[in-house]
Length: 517
Image 1 (tube, helix red, strand yellow):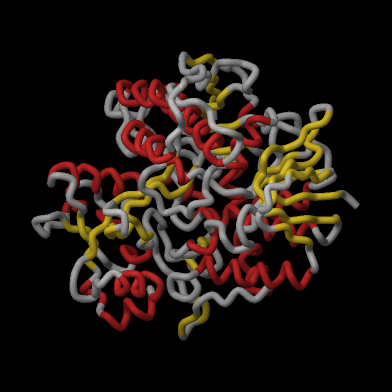
Image 2: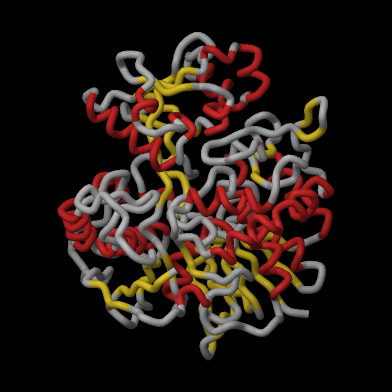
């Protein structure tokens, strides 16, 4: 029986723990409370080919199309192929997906060729999944340590051997393990505008990097097109996610003149891939003095909006907005990291004994742009696969980041150490401006210089954000093309030839390399 430490308690962490606990001694550690991660905020749903008029092959094709040529096909086939069985297991665990007169209800979201998105509580899918998994973990008697910040992954003789934690009372402790499963989520707090909770500071990605694990495709952050833009108490603005499913049900985007501008941007208009819609909104906002565009759901009616989207409806009403009568102001916001710790289809990283699952990982399944509602599915599928692989033989390096023909890039995240005190709000502004929706060399180089000027803070969330910010900018500089969520105005087209993954070299080698898909 192996000792397993799972770091994180969203869908990926809890599924990994539940499955691993059938054969191993498992401890879950999580930075906040067990339900404080991103999973419970997921509104739209979970995509899976569970209906008779759909197919795994179609789900694969849609995922590949959205990924803009950068997907690892083996990972896509694992994601979509395992999906139906894993979703049925969630139902068996007590997840109450919404139903209609024909059985499971389903919704259509952007870039899907079929309505295959299951939802719960209208727009509270993540919260319902988190509730059921939390209950299952408690029933299984799995140990859970809350308020435990991941300081580092411990490595002994090249193999992950445990974790170093800082507890809520300031105590530093170490937990020995035969396998460590990172399920710590993404890095949404790198950006000034984000749909992510405050704990999304990329801790697992940074810790894996310091442990020697390979990272990949860090330049690809997905910006959700529609975050409700509201005034904040400090005089600024705050955001609240407005699910893509609202547009799937028929809501439309309008500019300050009331025009549906997305009709001129893409044949699928509001249901174009997320990167296209987000950039379309950004261009329209720039043309109207940075005023937000509006999402018009008034044609859907008050009864439908309240029933189908109760969480969003409540947020609008709390802000004094009746979205059944007036359009709501929306803006793009950082939403999901497609890059992360490079893994194979079993969640294995390049460090033996270290697994990564969910948003912290980069399996290559999403490519350059995640298909809507594949995120919960990713955590579910690859957490199950990782748990099954604990104790099995280890591949040295995930095959898709170990191909021949490595080529060095001029970009590097090793920018030295500055003397300016670290300021998180300034870092977020730098990333939003220089490495946000629109990028170019001048802006990225300016961002790199400003990040290099910061003095690294004490180990913790801020240090992780600074390290990852430098890596994201270096990766974005390295990719001299536009592909999926990465748009360079100085290289507005995809590069010819086979798309290549960006893999920052380990800390001991001050270069960045790219490898073919």
